[in-house]
Image (cartoon, rainbow, N blue to C red; front, side):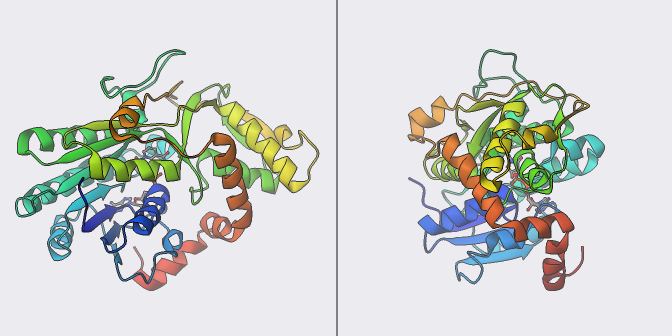
Length: 352
Ligand code: NAD
């Protein structure tokens, strides 16, 4: 079992990274956690209020593409493990502007790998964990699952940039012997999800009685996993995974987009005391996303078999809890939607 003493987390102010930091710090007292995040539109320090002030925690505003900064942090903090979340993560944005996706996701990962390789020479046991996505495998028909052996066939600039990063991780393992791990997870849901993504967007629009945009025929299938189960899987792979290995992470929980939207509508109607079916009336089918992958479904049996990981949330429970979280945290949502959350860090850390 590998027990890190000083962890560098990149992208820890985002949706999954912030959930991971809170999860990890709760169970690993005494381990240093340094969060390197550029605070792009997707990074929000309010996600981390629970750990602010903890002496084991440090936030550094900075870019993973900044080689000097990264090398300095690894040395100064005597880092013995990197968990790499930082990325441009939104497929729609990658269709509008792919450049930043290549810069952050490919070049940023290479910068971290190179600094890690040099740093690791003096740190026995050093590990680098790349957090990736099932989208690198491309799209499935009605049958079958992605396994770790499925060839990479990304279809969007986002998934192509993540696949490029995954291949660099492989190269640093094969060529330089860097102890790398690579997780590939299905769609996450849960608290602190940026309101441009499907589930929080629907919750927000239902509340405001705004149209609920659903791509194409709504029959695209995604496999959903609670972000806390993803965090637990990453911790398990970091500590127990054999270096050089890839682990798929998924909840065996496939949903058609339209069924998820209908479910969220019904749960929201119940909570808001609206007549049954009212919110479904807001559903509006819109022109399909370019290159829209039809189905993702992940086979996570390796993780279950080798590292005894199991998701703890049922979807019924997780989605209900998520909706309740959003309803109870409308202040957080409003700040994100209005951009007001940015003022907080601009005051503290200066303008970008
Ligand atoms: P997110 O967009 O919510 O967060 C990304 C974070 O990275 C933000 O805090 C942002 O400020 C930071 N960042 C961006 N560019 C940076 C840079 N150059 N330097 C430093 N920090 C930078 O994303 P997320 O949904 O939390 O996803 C995190 C990771 O997990 C990504 O690598 C993504 O590919 C992967 N992933 C996401 C999902 C999902 O469903 N959201 C599923 C599987 C894998």
